[in-house]
Image (cartoon, rainbow, N blue to C red; front, side, top):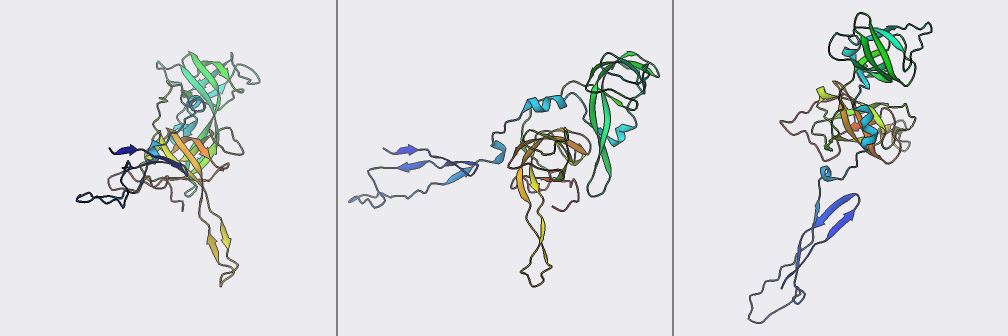
Length: 305
């Protein structure tokens, strides 16, 4: 009776399952049986590589959740429409938790709860220099006490003192945390623009802002690769000693998009070999997308990858 053996192979970060082997221990490849029509077939084990989408990614939800019920990016078109703080009853404008302040552009609707945010650094396309949005620095939470122009609001929570010009962004119900990580199904040529917390070194579980958003096909769950741009060096042994050679980009790790805006996205760094840096390249994971006809394939930037 034939025996079946299943061999699992682990190696080089890939999971493979060898084909089912059929072996008859009493019959070898050179077995001969008189008067028999026995055919001996030599079978060679083969490896079936699982697609990258089946890799077991561990998503650190505790790092993502704080960003899902607030806006940590202010889009360019949104900036001039947001409510803003105009004054405080305190002479030194020291507004913190428990204090009231006044704001304009607060609409008379059923929405009363706001995130107080301070516009931070500009996010620009590194090629066109177009301003795409601004960092939203979390100052705290506030609620409307009296509508009007200006409206009166009470500061409920504060990370630092609010001041004139700080914006008010409507609080929303927390976004879904049911992420389904998968390689991006659209062409991505992006870069890391900023890191939350202004950390000097970007590592695993850090949240970053990257170029490209919903208008470019980005969706929550997109898995992308991070590369360090290859340096340009001089080939001193070439016929022309001044000849320059562009070294290959160096694969650093992967990240996952978890929140998209029009032209920008927030992503969490899942796994890196070494610390990554601002302006590192973010692009498709090799072998996962080939720009097939009929799929949304839009360049995020004209940056030369």
